[in-house]
Length: 193
Figure 1 (cartoon, rainbow, N blue to C red):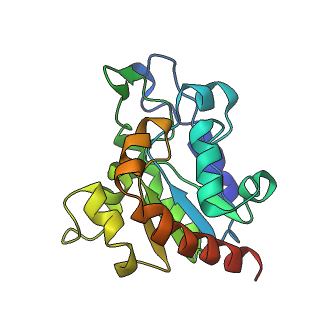
Figure 2 (cartoon, rainbow, N blue to C red):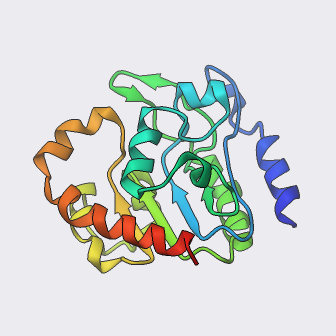
C-alpha cells in the first residue's frame, strides 16, 4: 500500500471509537523521505482538538530538546510522528489514560515499511520503549534513558517532555547534560544532510 493511501486509512480509522470519550481523531505525520521518527504515547486533549501533533507544552519542550524549529518539526519530509495510540485516549486519575493498543497492532508495521529513510528514532515514554526496545534492556524508563549510549545514535529513549515530568528532570540532571547535547547534534546533522 502506498504511503498516501495508508495515511488516509489511518486518519479514517474508527477501530477504538466506542472506547474514546471524545471520539476518534487519529493524529499522524509522515513522508517516505523523513529521516527522524518520533514514537510517543498518544495525543493529549489539546492535540485532539487541533489535530496537530505535539501542539502543546510537551511539544515545545520536545522541540527544545531536539534543538529544532517548528517549521522543521512539522515538515513531514524531515520528521515523521507515529504515536503508540493515534487518538486521545481520555483522562484518568493521574493524567491521560494509556494509549490504545489497537493502533500499534493495526498500523505501525505498515507505516514503518513506508518510512525507509529513517536514521533516528525517538522513543518517548515507557509505552514506546516497552514496545520497541529489546526485552533485555532496562526494566524502567530511567534505566532505558540512562543506557542511551547503547542505542545512540540511531535510537534515543527519552522521558516524556510533559511538565508533569519536571520532578524527574530535576532528579536526573545527567539527562540535560549528557543526552540532550548528543540528541541535538544528531538531529542537526540529519536535517543538514
